[in-house]
Image 1 (tube, helix red, strand yellow):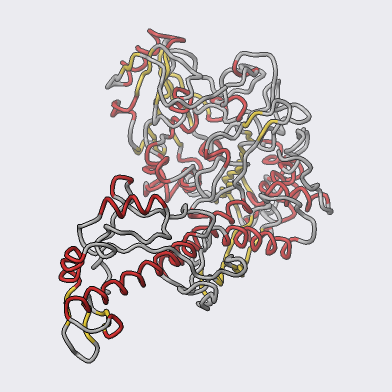
Image 2 (tube, rainbow over the protein chains, first blue to last red; image 1 turned 60 degrees about the vertical axis):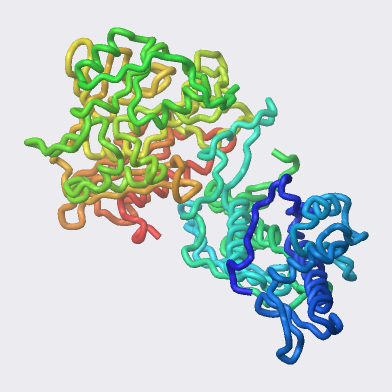
Length: 293
Length: 335
C-alpha cells in the first residue's frame, strides 16, 4: 500500500483503540509488529469471506491486493469500501457485533464501540516465541586526546546493529545514532554531582550536569544494520531503543583506554581533569567508584 | 536551597533609555537595585528566588550603551554590545582577534546573541554551592561548602582563595586584560576609568562581589587602546563540553616579537582564582627571550608557583602550566 494511504491516528482513549503493550523496554517494535501482523492477517481473511459471501465461491479463492479483494484469475472483485459496506450487512464477526474471544477486555470494549461502522477485525498475537528478543550492536569509536590539557574529541563513530528486519531505515538510523549520543554523553561528561557531606545534588542546571551537545559528537557518525530477520517473529523485526546507549558509551571508553593507557580512568564520565591528573603523576590516579556519588 | 519555580519575586521593572538615567536610578535605589544587561546571569538568580531585588534596572533599551566605535586610539565597545556582534566585527577580528576568539568561545550561539560584554565581565561567581543558594561566605554566611575534604571543588580556585574558593567565570576578561583595555563607569562622582585588571576584586577585599562596581555605579563601555593592535595573540579555553560551558580554565596572551625575541608580552588566565589573573612574573621572565618551547616551559613553571590546590582540582596546576606555555609558543609548537 502506498505510504500515506492509511490514516495515522494519534492515540486517544476516546477513539476506541485496541489494547496494546506499553511502548518501552526496547520491545515496542518486536511486540507491536507481531500483534499488527496478526490482526492484518485476520483482516485479510475477513475481507475474503465477505467477498465470497457477496460474489460467490470460497474465501480461499480470493486474494487481497491494491486496496481490493478479487477472485483469483482476474475474476469479480470489490473495493475495501464495498467490502466494508457488505460487512455491515453481514454483521456478527464481520462488523464488530461479535468479537474474537481471545482478545483483551479493553479491545473487546473498543470493538463493541466501533461495531456496525465497517469491517471490524480483532486478533491476538499467538505466534510462538522462543528465547529473548534483544537487539545487539557493535560500536566503534576513534578519539584524539591532547595530553597537555586532558581534552579529547571523538573523531569517528560507527554503530552496526543486529535488530532483525529493518522496518524503516531512516527511523532506525535516528534511533541508533540518537541513543549512541546518549551513551556518548555518559562517557564524556553527563553526570550528577552530589555533595557527600550533605547528600544534596549541586549540579542542577544543564551547564553544571552537562548533557552532550551536537558539537560533542563526530560530524559524520555512521550506522548500518545486518537486516537478518529474527526467526522468532513473523515480521522479523526487533526493537532498538536502548542497546546503542551501552555501545556508544563503551566504545568511547575503550578508545580512550587504548589511546591513554590502562587504568588512567576507572569510572565515567572521563574528563580532562582525570586524564591530566594521571599523566602529571605518571601513574593512574583515579580509584574505582565505591559509592554512587 | 534552590528550587526552580520559574516565578520571579515581584520587583519594579525600570527601563531607562539613557545611560545617565540608568545611573541615576541605580544611585537612587542603591542596594535595592539590580542591574540587568542580557539577563543570562540575572534570570538564574531571580527564577531561583535567591536574589530578591526591589527594583530591576533593565539596560536593554539604552541604545547609547550598544555598539563598537573607533576612537582616536583604538576602539570603544559599549557595555551592552552583544558577544556575537563583537565576535563578528571586522575591526575586532583584524586588530584584536584575541577578543573575537574569546567571546566566540563563550557559552552557546543563543547565549552570545543575548549576552553582552558588560554582562560577561560583570557576571557573578558560578560556584554551584553559591549558585544553589547555600548560605556560604559569599552569600553572607560563615562557611565555604566547596573548601572541605569532600566538597565538590574540581572547578574551583588554585590561587587567591580567601574563605571563598570560587573562580571568576568570564572568557572575555583575560583577553581584555592582555589588550590593556580600560573599563569606563558612570558613578555618583562622575566618570571613572580603570585598567581591566583593576576592575576585578578578590574576596580579600570584598567577598560579596567580583568587581569594583558599587551600588550606584554603571559600567558603560570598554575601551581598547591601539597599543596591542595586530600583536601575536593566543587564546585557549579548556572546558568539558564543546559548547555551552564555562571554562575549566582559559588563557590569553598578546606578544610583540622582534626577530624571534619577545620584546613585550602580556599573559592572563581565568577560572584559576576569584578574579582573572595577569601573570606578571611570567611576562617579566619571558620578555627579551626567544618565543620558543624553553621560554614557554619556563614561564609555565613560574606561573604556577604558589598555587594551592583543593581536594579535587590539582589538575589545574599542570593545566595552567601547559596553557601558559602554549600562550607563548602556540599549541602546535608546544606539542
